[in-house]
Amino acid sequence: MTRKLFIRSSIAIGICLFFGFVGAVATQTAMNGWYTALDKSWFDPPEWIFGPVWMLMYVLMGIAAGIVWSKGFYHKWVKTALYHFGFQLLFNGFWSLLFFGLNKPFWALLTAITLFILVILTIRWFKIVNDLAAYLLVPYAVWVLMALVLNLEVWYLN
Image: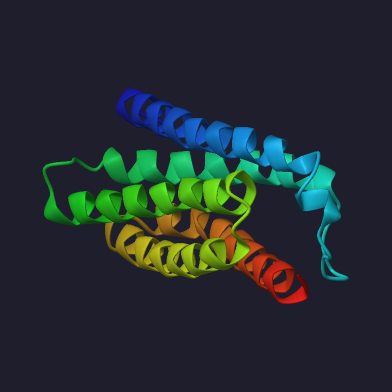
């Protein structure tokens, strides 16, 4: 691993973990009241699994973004890929604020659909720059899809 890749991946991981922290703060406010009272689907995972999985997703996202960034921000494909990454990261944080912070599952569902589309587009652009970076985002896409389905069920059941 080159020094440039290590530094850029570290910065990107830090940015991703910051968004995760903001989401965790919004989540904690709802876990002691609103969220626990909701009807949830039969396939809803235990609450303790979300924190570690999201942490892993943010680290993988940061590594992937660092790989793309290390290819040189001057290149238009790198810029395009990282702009998509930034937009999906904003929607990631926005979803937590809508769902947990504001208790708006319908609006969060629309945001989750948009987020999933943005993640797929980000994977597409990352693949143009670097295959490994794109593959590192695949577990995140699956996790976002699962979150979208869980969000849909919460909205439907409540």
